[in-house]
Image 1 (cartoon, rainbow over the protein chains, first blue to last red):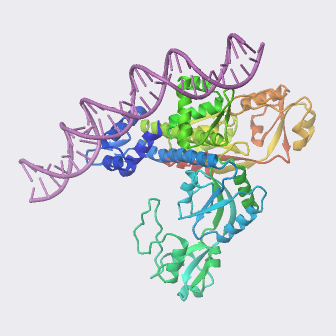
Image 2: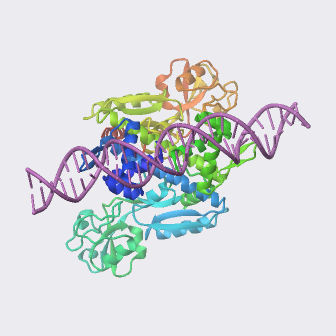
Image 3: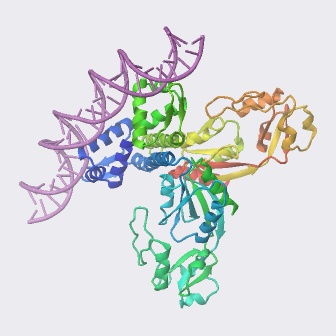
Length: 281
Length: 281
DNA sequence: ACCCGTCGATACCGCACCGGTATCGATCCC
DNA sequence: GGGATCGATACCGGTGCGGTATCGACGGGT
């Protein structure tokens, strides 16, 4: 199976429309139809159910979509990492990815400690939205990441835990609950007038609901200060709170574990040093 | 980057010889030379150092070899799992892989418990040599595996621990150390007349050394009974020992954790049930 | 009911590119 | 210095990819 065939199939499976998929791929529709047919014939499996009015995935097609995306990510990672290895033998920096606005002081400590190591190389810090880290690591855009369990998925990555902490409810100053010394999840699940914020899904779209749309933590804290929403977050956010925000411990919220994660094929010395430094912290 | 190019490069990088690589690929040497040159040009990176007498990997080449193998495995897995999903929608069995001669009663209990679950499907058990499980899981030959930390690598797989146990030294009956109630690693590291067995490497070759070559646990136990070697193994091997073999606890050996492992993309109901059953045991 | 619009399949064509054979050029060994 | 080894180059033929033109099936609107 060639990556071209996989790219074609993934495009059709995502669009569920041959015409749009062909446009996205920059080719005409007939070659695309033929390629899919050939792929089906070679695999001996029906991948798509065409009814001349709608296209649907079969069981096998859903499998190939899932596995094919992972395979294409792996190919892209191979290409990207090879390019980076070529242009920067030994001198190339490490790309570290983390969620914007999270793990601030832990990251600062890590970068300081690593810079003091012998043989340390420059570290580029890449900040991204929630849920993007895993893909950036799997596609070779980043070498190592700081993620938060159980929020981030770490399937297919190697990880080491760094720190575990409880969670706090972040509320606008003056809210009735801010007089409490602790709350429970049930207390904050559906506060009148403070709907839960909506985070974007993997495809960038937002789910329906009453809460405001947010992209990162800074934005979120601002919206809480404005009294539009609230959030349950790891307790280290306290460091970033001004007096217009109040944090109340949530006693029955699941603990959040910050982990350092990297793709399993990694074998470079600087990255191994960075990981070892992080674990020692 | 097409999988064909990756296959070609991996062949050359493994053989370090264009002629042999071409033979292995079933093509002539000139097209292979051209394909590698084109790949290098497209990546903008020198992958191989040719000195008309020897071929060597550059830094970028080593990266592409490592990442390319992983990518090819992912493509192979996508193809294999799609075929399996097609021919057996719902009725297809699960393939479980484990080391020959290991985790016997745990496996039996798991299979019994799973068979009693509602919606259970047939489970094919695939026995293989040590170190092969990871690749079988990553290439889609198997769906789930029982592995043993820290012996087996689980990079790139999702795992859940099932059981942790100490290790015992397995010795031929009558050996002086069998009178002891416990030993230390240093006691058994270099026993006169009982050299360590040699396991095959990933490529099937055996390292040099005085000990006998072994392929699986049955063979190993037989060679121990013959007084040719000894081994440190998880304590559950006791169940398989006859009176010609004696097990002595090794107090400072690292604990062995049996884990259930599966590829991260897995999303099938029967496999999820099997994993949940295993964790409950 | 009929027509038109939509959408995937089919037919056919030209060209890029892959793979094969023949040969060269460099290096090492005897 | 001659032969052997090994990768690079030159050239050729065929496969197959992508393009345009068109068909056929299904739905929806008036």
